[in-house]
Amino acid sequence: MRDIYVIGSMSVDLVTQASRLPKKGETILGESFFMTNGGKGANQAVSAARLGACVHMVGCVGDDRFAEMILSNLKNNNVNVDNVEPITHCASGTAHITLADHDNSIIVVPSANGKVTVELVDKVISEMATDSIILLQNEIPKDVIEHIIEAAYEKGITTIYNPAPFIAMDKGLLSKVSYFTPNETEVKDMFGEGFENVIAEYPKQMIVTLGDKGATYFDDKLINIPSIKAEVVDTTGAGDTFNGALAVALSEDMNLGEALQFANRAASISVGGLGAQGGMPYRKDME
Ligand code: RIB
Image 1 (cartoon, protein in one colour):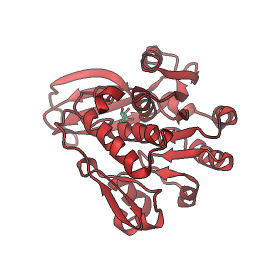
Image 2 (cartoon, helix red, strand yellow):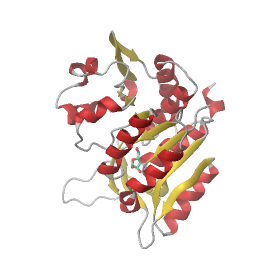
Image 3 (cartoon, helix red, strand yellow):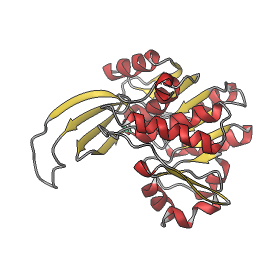
């Protein structure tokens, strides 16, 4: 089995549940509050590890108590943290989440996640086997993301780029990633138009996640892999579960259609639990 390297963010999610979102300038009473593990990078790493892959996390944490919480959670989920750097005098990343109406809104404060350097990723990429898979997202500095894409391309390493949250990026770089996995909103932000108008330019490379409508890619024609119906408790982290599972499926040499079915199944199970990682399935849950 091929190793998976997740290069990205690790955060603590500070989650408030409320009956609705407050309007601008308004204060409302919430229903509950909890802290849990999150960050798109860490979520994708935990997703892949629970599904049985050999996963390495690469990134930065602060020197606070949140760093201890982040690291012990990754270790408990069998994620290798040898390439996680602690940054002194720095806070760990946090995400400030409101859950309302079966949906979420999130403000991410990068803190240590903004300190990931080209030097750190270069060291890791130079030590990686060429059959490894790199999974990356947009919660670390943009110049580092661009560098990873270039360096992995040069080395012939498979990359899965989840362009979330949206940041403006040179679209020419997309030709150098093996797969990229925007949702519908991110496609509009990236290209200024709906996925139907651009997906044919990226056959078997652009995978558009459509929430409860599954995932779509182009291979001579538009192919939709429908999602599995599920009772929704919390959709936070469903996209991350999908990406982690996609990496696992590709590491096991499933073809793209099979890999997307696997990823859809994992994502649909994940929405049944509270918190980004609360509902993420283990391999036995997939059978
Ligand atoms: O994708 C969900 C994640 O986005 C949350 O866990 C939060 O940390 C934000 O980064």
